[in-house]
Length: 415
Ligand SMILES: CC(=O)SCCNC(=O)CCNC(=O)[C@H](O)C(C)(C)COP(=O)(O)OP(=O)(O)OC[C@H]1O[C@@H](n2cnc3c(N)ncnc32)[C@H](O)[C@@H]1OP(=O)(O)O
Image 1 (tube, rainbow, N blue to C red):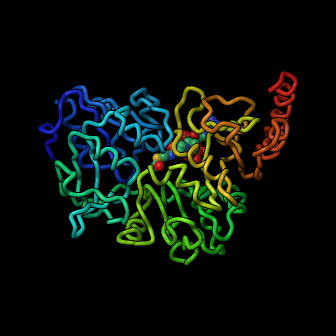
Image 2: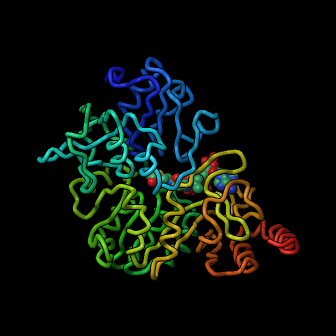
């Protein structure tokens, strides 16, 4: 195991590459050795490695922009502090020193003939961390694909650690009947030439499976999963009609399995980008027919969306939701969809609620379309009363009467 202590100072603030770009060897070493250095803090946006546990939290203080993946249990135990921030703002905050970055710990592909390493599986805030850090420690993993796009020159790396081990993989989620029903309603908004932004998981995968008969789909997304490979191989994903990056799928994170990583290796049809490109309003504003699809925990009867907390429990995150909701809703011929199941906890809890139990992630003035397994509620430009009617129509039938009663009280009282 690499000895990190010569490179670290007491009180250092560390930024880790995230998701499947997590530098597993470096994180493991820091968990072992952090206590010897003392007073360390670290930021990571999401983690699927399983390395962050309640015990590992003793080595350094951890913060994140949400409670995604394995980070959820740490948030619950008070071992992880959440910074509410749009994905588009993480890199600028690192650059400005608001999210401290004395040390960048990242995972990269082997270098090309020009001495440049590909960011491989994660673009997003890696470059910002490299530019800001006093020390850049990079795990050079020969199992990481060389994905065209965001490159880090060898000269920017202070400590290069060669490793050879499979990078973190996230297996495709199991698709349930509810996911399929949600996907059908979402897919109705995706036509020939649409440009898709979506996350990874059961609903996005179910949507992609329904698009086999579309022509010339495009992608401009914060992340891509295995589901995209099939569409690309079937000739459906051509990016041919995009106004910018024609012929190329734009993304900031590959979250999937070896199948996706092999497909992306040296593939000119995909570009790994920083969030300053994937989530930037000016870039997104140049795309027509952009359909953005994100998820949530709750939606209230006026269309306010909560993707972060259920009561005191932090379960999700702000993510790129607002960046993409605004972009989709403004894109000519495009739209933005918030897709969620109508109920949680085995049907015992409605996700369409009179009042949110947590914060507003997407404002009702930004919201466009809400989809559940019972249909789509188009809210943009609708009055509060009409929104309430449309949202109750897509709520779980078991809760509709209760929601009608609550709506009546809200309407008498005034919204
Ligand atoms: C690489 C990058 O770009 S980083 C950006 C990462 N993305 C984000 O941060 C986006 C933020 N969004 C999210 O975190 C997710 O989409 C969520 C949390 C909003 C929804 O996640 P999903 O997994 O689709 O929701 P799902 O319905 O499966 O519920 C997840 C859990 O929350 C619980 N839950 C969901 N809704 C509710 C609710 N209204 N009340 C209570 N609990 C709820 C579920 O029971 C489930 O719990 P379990 O895991 O113990 O079974």
